[in-house]
Image (cartoon, rainbow, N blue to C red; front, side):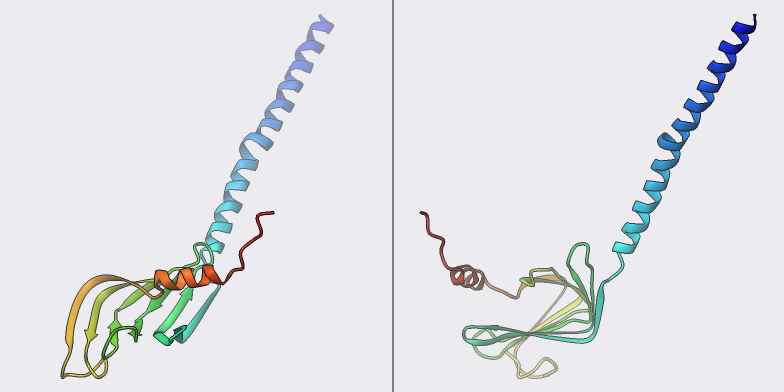
Length: 167
């Protein structure tokens, strides 16, 4: 009888230890890991920098190609894109007068080749300046994707890398 009680007590003790280990490693630790992962995702969503009164000038072999400005730029380190508040673009690579673009918001991707403008997008082409009331044409839309760098520029950058010897 005493031996039977010892076996039962030993079994209950083993069951208690097994449940404690399962709770520690099977339930509690994944919850802690999920909470820390959620905190790191939230932290990573924070911008790594922002710029007030942002201005950038794009230059190619022929000279100034465009000027991009915004009241505020906020960079997201997770996906590498930059959110622009009230962006304005002047593109100089058109015959005649420059093309002026403006919008409520914009997204510039990490490579800087494309800019998505959205919210009251306005394009003025063939005018003396963006606010001119005379001459040129005006186009309005809700969204517009523009290329700031042409494929020729990408080819130029690729051609600048010296070729590797095959041997």
